[in-house]
Length: 378
Image 1 (cartoon, rainbow, N blue to C red):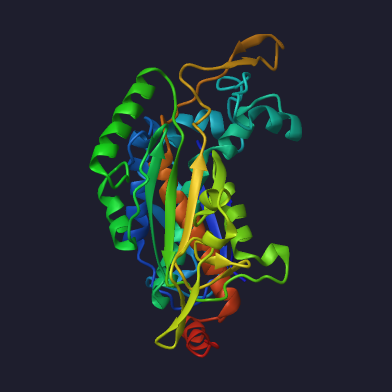
Image 2 (cartoon, rainbow, N blue to C red):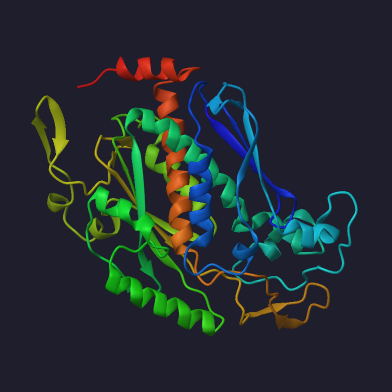
């Protein structure tokens, strides 16, 4: 069973990932991982923190001569900003008072976190609850993608909404792959310009913007996931993993939101049999039926709220004085939607990889390939 863990604080020494259950002899392209990490950092709307960091993965174990060896894969992404924070974040001895956060931010986990873990400083919460952790999950997703490529499974994503500006055009998979050429990751040039103008306006006013993006995954074999138990359904697993990404508030599979307003007779994909294979004439289900992949493209849309860290902060209560105050201000982004599309794509690929290995399990890449080739197909 493939599983992973993450560790590390936003301003600590670094972010750590551990992957267990990954097959041996999978080629790992470090440059590709670092390329995607850079894309996560440099999308339009990011804040000043990303000008300091230059994320690069450093493998510690589980890989030799660029191939996995079956043992746990561990790695670190070092925080370059740690040198400016060492006296406040050193694990053994540091000054905990100077960077104390006493004014919890509405929309963040600050207040609930200090109550749950019995803290008197929100920094102990925000350092771990920060979206900085997603750099690890992107790395894990790219590692999973490199495994899945051996089976022809590919992914793409693109931004479809920033604030109230929406791109409702339909695109083929290969067109969506082109989104990587644009730092906003929106495919329509006219809409992209409007989005940039809106982001610049919000940033000038100390505000933030939410939005949405679409993920596509193609060549997923039939039968990943299962209908036999609620916790084995593929859409449930994807939804659970994706909703754990910071600021995400809703998820849609296929034409989910649209079909809820339609009759059943025009909301389902008719089945045909062509060239020895079952196919569907449409894909309103988004590639998942009954909790299982059905062989069509998996289509997911993710919706994020605006980031709650505001340079024009909202009202809160000082946890020391219990008096009304304005929320603490941390370095933050204006919008994360372009970066979130990369994060969401990586997280979705990790789930697909986990379910693929459940169905075609093996200790080595060769064994998985043999199991995949010999699988029952109708």
